Amino acid sequence: MFTGLVETTGTLISKKDTETGAIFTFSASFVDNDLKIGDSIAINGACQTIIDLNENKTEWSVYSSFKTLELTNFKDLQVGEEVNLERPLLPHSRMGGHFVQGHVDGVGTVIKKEFQDNQKTLVVQIQLPEELKKYVVIRGSIAIDGISLTVVNITDCILELVLIPETIQKTNAKYWIEKKKVNIEVDILARYFEKFIKQ
Image (cartoon, rainbow, N blue to C red; front, side, top):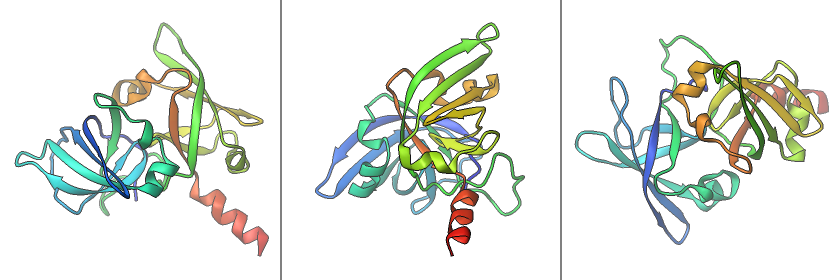
């Protein structure tokens, strides 16, 4: 379980295709770094498992299956690209953001990005997959590339978000450009509600 409060960003340093997926290696540093092989980690909002780790814990690898590549923006990642990172929520941690599972529901496309308020805030519009729009409501929660955000507006499949300076500084959102593919995880409560009303 994650919160969508990105801890740091990392850099993709290598990508190796396999018969059934790909192995990605990242470089990153965490405060109080306690990474170990077998740990879960959210990369752009997708929960992955660390399979290899260097001695000082600043370079580590994950294996992504063909299904992960199919459902996320991992297939588009390029060496040198920055990704958002978050370790799992601890039982004694404060709960900020919202409950994020690290299970990506689909991939959206950035269609507009505009800095406002003397470059302090960032307004972003994202095209959602048609099948996800029913789970998104104004002032509801959504995770975009692993960032917990509040929905400002939604019209048809166009989602509007406003990112504050702290979010811009700590995440890869500053590098988003038009046509950029981003991972989307809708609020799990919306999915539970859908199931309840269908029973």
